[in-house]
Image 1 (cartoon, rainbow, N blue to C red):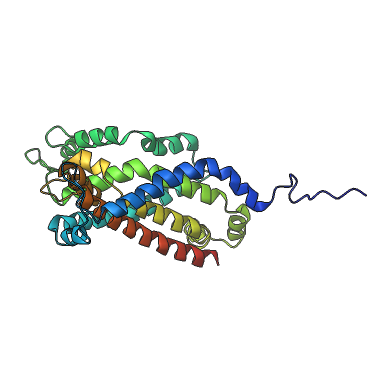
Image 2 (cartoon, rainbow, N blue to C red; image 1 turned 30 degrees about the horizontal axis):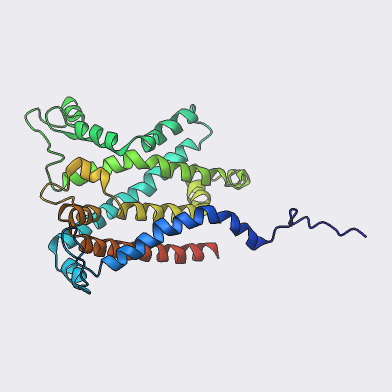
Length: 301
């Protein structure tokens, strides 16, 4: 008598054996990620410099970090960037996706590509464009404000030299570059919502705003959580776009945590202290990820 074939597992491979296919990728990942993390953790307890012998100093690097005003100011600037950009990166992409998901909009494909296109442009190019757009005297923004008589011709707004206005410039540049990525995530989530929900709402006479509030938003709970924490982690690691635009100025007002780490490790060659700063950042991101997992589990229940 022939043995019946297991239709649920047609090739006869046990579940745990599927992980064998991950080994070619998993081994290099462990070597180049966790080994480097372990090395940084060990170096954070030393005074490692290229021109000095390696010595164990215990918690001295962490004590110096927590006593450094630039450490706290750079951390505060990074938190400021997180507070400014994360809400914008949730609301604006959601509104764009809501607009592009409408059946009444023509050329939806064109607008999707247009809004997503800055995401594939190099950060350096985006930064150069932003510096020309926001510079005084010949910049596009000041020129438009003067053209529409919102700004006197004799007045020039120094977007990149003012400690407050520079953050407006940075947030606009960040949203311009990255909103399209989150828009695609929201758009994919909206297209997974069954049309029957909206058809039932139409029968009940619901308005477009009511359908968005009572159907679209609740059905995208997991997308909100995913987008929120992807943006949080990306914001904590921000460096290149701000550094290329302002180099941390004016007067250190936009020096981010990664820039502080970079200057400590590679400008001052204090690699042990830079490793300590990297470990602190790792712990911050680990804490954010832990909160994400708890919130995700709550939404999945």
